[in-house]
Length: 196
Image 1 (spheres, helix red, strand yellow):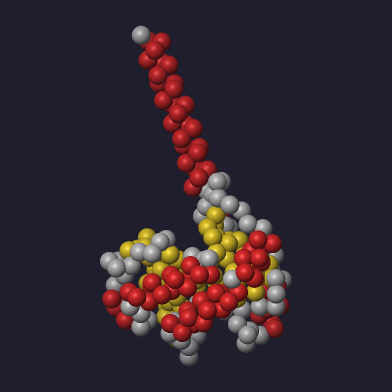
Image 2 (cartoon, one colour):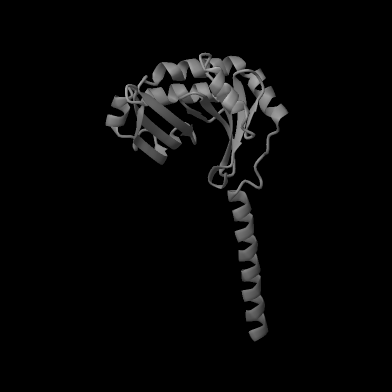
C-alpha cells in the first residue's frame, strides 16, 4: 500500500514537472515559428500593395497630434491599445491611454474614441487592412511599425520610414545592429519583448 501511494505521488510529481516545462516553453515561444530575413522580405514583397494601403489608411485615421499603437488578438479583442497625445509646439508626449486584453465593444472608453475621432467600425476596417497585409499590429510615428507575427513574448516587425525622413535619422538607424534594412526606407526587426 505504501509503495503504491509513493509511486502515485512520484508519477503525479513527474507529470506536473513535465507539464510545467512544456507550458513554460510554450509561453516563451519554443514552439513558435522563427522567421529569417528571406521570409520576411518575401512576405513584404508579396504584400507590398497591401502594406501601402494599410499605411495610407492608418495615416488617414491617426490625428496629427496623437500617436496610436494597436495590436489585434482577433476580430473582437485587442492584445494592446495605446494613445499618446503630442504637443507639437513643445514637442511633449503625454500618454493618454494604454491597456492590454480589451474587448473592442466593451472595454474602450468613449472619451478615448472621441479624442481620436474613431468609432467601433474603425477597428474592423483597420483589422481588415492588417489581415490583408498578413500582420497583427501597427504603431504610428517615424518609422511606422507594423507587427508581423509574435514569437513567444517577442514580435517580428517591419519599420517603414517616411519619405521625408532625414538622412541623419536613416543613417543613425542603419548603424543599429537590431534593425535590418532591405531597401532604402524599409527594415525589419525582431523585438524580444521583456527579454530584449
